[in-house]
Every structure is written in structure tokens, then in C-alpha cells.
Image 1: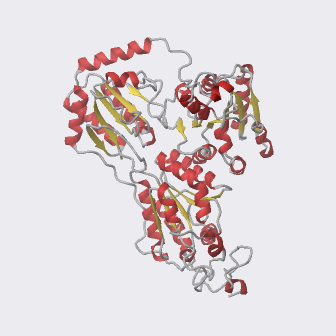
Image 2: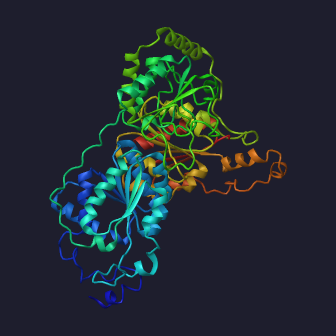
Image 3: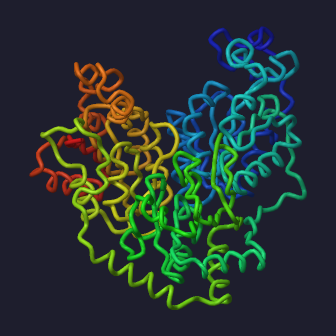
Length: 592
């Protein structure tokens, strides 16, 4: 052992003592790093997203061995920010449904990635997140490096830090359980409620010698869950007896086959569908005659049956459940364990996988018998509503005194995006005050067309890159507010877009302020001193940098648009660049 190792590592905090005296790893044998990579292969991980930390040398060695030997296995991607690594994993899984692995560094890296991990928890995106600690601090023959003793340890271990924003969090105590822990973690992540899980894999475990267990084998897909026939028939009788039912949805479209099964279910009884502002993805074609927009107020007030399909927060305030309506909840996990307070007011639950449950319920409806006269009456009403003239400017959702005479109307931006984007393009949305406009006027009509970034701001570019990585041939656009954009790790994200050849269209809705913060101030103090003196705090973004200029160091296209006459040629130029393989940032000065 070197002098640096005997003293507990080098003075610069590097792993100075890893040049001898180990129980495994450096002698050419397999170690805990190989256990993790073997588990990745068996659970079907496609990509390891890493924001590097010194603990992952054993995994890097296993990856080098994988390439040398030509062994099939996951792709490895180094990224320069933890939020980016987690967000790309989120986007990739949203596009594929397959959970991936994210490697972070100790507790600091875990905390940097916490925003994205919490967003994955809210989104229901499965992933395995791992980082490390030291359990011996160099007191035994294995020297993990002095940084673990001096700077990186935390009382209770990193698993205690991760617990509040993950579905499940634990420590791997020995290399003998490393493979099994990872397989279990990946399976837990996929089971309802799907979400991120965390593994603390100490340095000492990673460096221990490991042999592949004889019983290891590829991990099967989860089995489908559907309610029993009696429960389905009870729900079918509720549906067939209801005169004015309504469906409210938030995230059914994220479940495999959920979009199509929901269309079939709604059509079977001509039930109108509401997709409120809380909807986080494309759930039902907004061009469909049964789609009744995003305001549920009128329909809920007169409904005798409310069907909540993957709808975690249907009423606000939570106690504002219509008193005279029955409520049928269809969800894989109706009561989300990560929500501190939740009121559904259900009269019946159907709990199980969304598409199989909806299809089984549709079949039960036909078995019980449909009142054709009732359904015909609802269909007539649908045609009557469809014939009404549409209200201009619907969905603006911005308060009085917050707009500007200069700039481009955000609704016009979305209308043109809908026209110019490929019909199968994916739109990732990280706007706040413009989210309702994007939702309504994009008019998403197929699965995966629209997805909203959940959790804290600053994940949008990474999520969009993850979607693009999953399907490089698919056109991907990010709609984002200027405040949200500035929360993103911009330099790291644009570098990844260039280095990984993942061109995006990034459209910034720039009102040069944190408008959502201003609107909340106005809600509580509509005639306050701030209004009278035009003196607001926490709002001003007028000194922001030239956002379009941020594209230049990466050889990307940057455009700043403020004249409505420039909107079409600007977006056409940007899309031409994206389709030729270059990311484009279009910074649009909007009127509100």
C-alpha cells in the first residue's frame, strides 16, 4: 500500500490509495461494478445515464470489459449535470416505458439530482438511481479515498436523504446482494405506483470480488392486473344507469394502450371527456367530438356520475366534490403515496392496469346492456356542442394588467407549431402561465404528442433530449417559458444535444418576467401597494441574457422574434435547421 493509501488518500481528495491492497477489482477479477452491469443486462436497461462521481470506477471498468469482449449491454452516457442525467432518463422512459439507471455522486450529486428525481416520482416514471458512501473510511484493507472521510459522508447515509423523494430507498450491505438488490430495485420501480428507487452502493461493496449467481436470468415483464368480474359489472351498471356521466383524465395516456382504450370506452357510451389543466400528457384526442376542453366546472355541476381515470386531483379545493354525483375511480394506484393530502370522494374503485381495465369495463358495459336512447341523446348533444362557434382566445389564462402591446400572441405561436411540426412530433412542455394555451391549441390527437414536465422547473431540455434519444428519428420540440429555461442547466444540456447528435427545437415564450409569481401576488393583493406603485418583487427578468445567443458557442441556430410578421419564416427556418441535424433556440417575445 502506498504512503497516500496509508494516510487515507491523497491531499487533493482523489482516490489516492486505489493502487493496491484491494480484495478485488484491481487484480483483474469481477467486482461489484460487474454485478451492477450484469443486473442492468438482465432487467433490460438500455442506457446508463451518469453524472460522474469517483465511486463509479468499478462500473467503468466493467463497461470497458463489456466493450472489449463485445458483450451486449447498456449504452453509457456521461453528462455534465445531475438534473440533466435524471431528466434524460425521465424523457427516455416516457418514450419507451423501460426504466433506466442513473449514476450520481455521493450525497452532493444526489441532492443536485433531487429536483429531477422528485419530478420522476410525480410523473410515475420508473428508474433506478444510485450513488455511494464509504462504510469503513479507510480503516480496513480497502482504501476508498480520503474524500469520503473528509467531505462526503452524511449521518444516516444517503439512503435517508433520498427517502422523501423516491419510492423506495436502501443500502446495499454486501457484494453478495448487489445483483439481487439491483434487480429488486428495478422491479419495484416498475410496479404500481411506478417511480424512482434509490440504491446506496458503498465503495467497499463496489470493490469486493463478485461471482455471477447461478440462478440469474432475464427478468420478465410485470403481469397485468384487472378487477374481478363482479366489480366490473357493478361499475358497468353505474355507467349504463347514468344520464349525465363525465370522464375526467390526467395521465391515462402515459399507460401502455391507455390512450386508445380510453377512446373506445368513451365512445361506447358517448361520454364527454374533460382534460383539465392538471393533465400531464396527451390522454384523448383533442380533435375528437367527445373532447369537451379543459374546464370541468359546468359538466361536473350537472353530472350524476363522474368517472376519474388516472386523475389524482380532480377538485379544488379538495373538498369541492359535487354533492349529488357518484364517483367511479379507475386507476392503478388511486391514492398516491407521495401526495400529502388527496381527496377523491369515490363511491367505487376499479384498481388495476389502465388499458386492460378500460377494455374489460367496456366489455362489461355491453354485457350489462346499453340504454340506446340515453346514448343517442348524449350523441345528439355532442353534435350540438360541436356546432357552436369556438370562443376566440380560449385558454389564455393570464390576468389583467400583465400583458404587453408589443410582441407575438402566444396562441399564434402554438397554432403555427401545430401546423409546421411533423404530425408525430413529440412536444415537451415546461411553460407555466402558457401551459393551458399550449395544451389546448396544440390539439394533441395521438399518444406521446404532448407531455408536461412535472416537479421543479429546470428539467425541460433534459426530458426533451431523453425523448429524442429514445427515438432519434422523431421530431422533438420543447416549449418553455423564459424563467423555466433559465432554471435549466443550459450549457450542459446544449453540449449533450450537440455531442449526442440530438437536435431539438426549443421555443421560448419570453415575457421577460416570472409572470406566475406576479399573478399570485395579484391574487392576494389586487389593490395593494405593489399594484399602486408598480413595485413588484421576485418578478423581473428584464436583465436576462440574450437567450438566442446561447446557441452560438455550440454551433446551433439562435433566433429572436418579436414581430408577428417574422413568426412563420422564423419557425420555418428553425425547423429546417432541426431537420438538418442542428438544435435551434427560438426566443419569442410574447404579449403576455
